[in-house]
Length: 550
Image: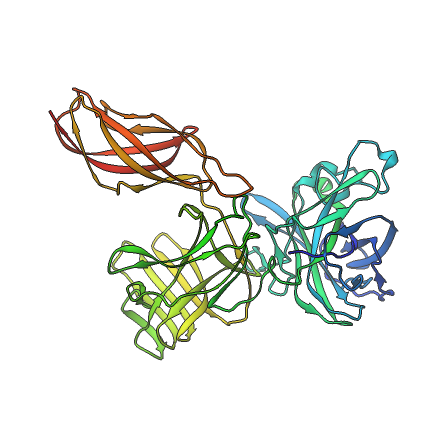
């Protein structure tokens, strides 16, 4: 959870044309001391890139219900660097600007997992005369926007977005994450973060921010790179945003439950956030048993009331192990001819077994990381191709696997004729965090099984017990449809129970559906599809093998 820290600087960015940064004499660093600061950036111009930090008037901003940092952090008054460029992203030209400052811990105690969170200041009553300071624009953390022609650019504030620093590939003109850029985490749970606003204003903390991972020791300094993206019109440069201010507040996560930490491949540790979690949630460690052709649950781990999870992965069942190499045409070096591997699927479900989502592990660069079990040590440097399909499947491996659990990065790319999978070992201890994308709205049919027999006599109703599963917190009315003319299902609408934030209500739904075939349905065997729809959109289906007799 995020803990208390005092508010520190407002970030003001002045954008001009691109040129290489030039150094200017540094000024005395300014400690935050609960004040708001303006970071003035000029990229280009006669004297090259410049950046200065100046104090604005004092405010009443402070954090509450958070664990205090030992004192205010300190920002150097002079930027280490300031960079801006325009790149093409899809159909849009986007200006990227980033600037780096040194952050120092001037206190006698460490600061752990410092996170700098953009905040919006909202005018609560529309009266500017009672505001202690200028609000930000339209619920964004930005204010005081100006265009190159000097006109007000407030209407463009919703198009600005805080992000991780990028650099430009000079060969392709494509922006890419800067390898040394300060990580920018998104989808953070900020229920514990409350900031006392200045008079006449309210405060909304954004759910993403820049992370300084680990511990900042007393007296230590670390560079922090702030970055912002926004679209531009190359044909009308005078309309582009020239200057703006970004407000942010610091917090720290002393336990790492929200921002993550060094990864033990065999341990799953983190905090999950979902409106329905709190009573009876489970994490299921699931494997595919390739021999039996079925899913096997190795263990079910109860979630704590606050969504925290901490457990050690099992040794996968023997039937879940399969060859590391999906093809036989290997070129390269490997220390063993093969190894058997398995990868778990970590389902988050209600106590009734209903899917709420799937746990993923991501690195600080937002890349997906995979926990992979190997039955022996093996080192692989090479590639393997499978040409038996309509396209060529290529594995490119840089792996150093140990017996037991490992961490790898798996990335895929494709062309019209080839699909390439890159597998790279990631050292244990690499920083990562859990993410919990919730499952889409879906109605699953646990029973009868797909393809089960449905025996109907013409004109006679047949009652069939159904065991349904609500996934993704789907609730409310769902309509049922069959694809065979003359066959009806009753009831034609099911009202699925809803979920509440106080706990989980049942997502498993046992009900009875009654099918009937009229005289227009020919006798004999045929497949029948039962479809579930919500608001006209398909949210589930199953197929039964229907036999109609006179």
